[in-house]
Length: 191
Image (tube, rainbow, N blue to C red; front, side, top):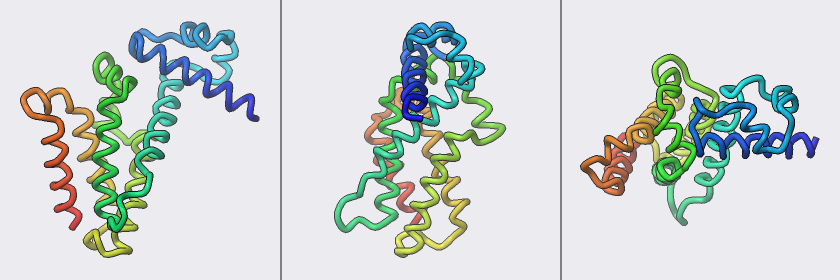
């Protein structure tokens, strides 16, 4: 099982490198297999197409990002303060992430179904994380009472819109100033 996991990680690493280099549409399973040093059949057995591989890659990358922002907040911070801080930290990480930047720069239309038709597995992963944060805020009284699932969904959609709109949002405004306003907006909305 360890070798299978290592193999999957090597394949996903190769896919990430290819997507960062040429984008999703120009990435082929053949290119990924070559970069990973495996046969095409090995890759095809695990991932039938590039879209499946990229979805798996994005889920892995977002999971790692969530683990990074999940680190403990400042001493004495309540759950709302931690949620707001983690949301802003997550946006910063995504804005700087080469994979996310490349997908948005070259293949933004691939994100459209996840904006207008359905939530994807990556969005569900983030929403689950936010739901836990919201429930912790209800428990410590720092987040106003409400429907936890609805509150988590709105935080997800708000943060997602910032990530996806970074280029137009920062065309004439400072990124840090926007994030400071977003932090105040989220804090006030959840208080």
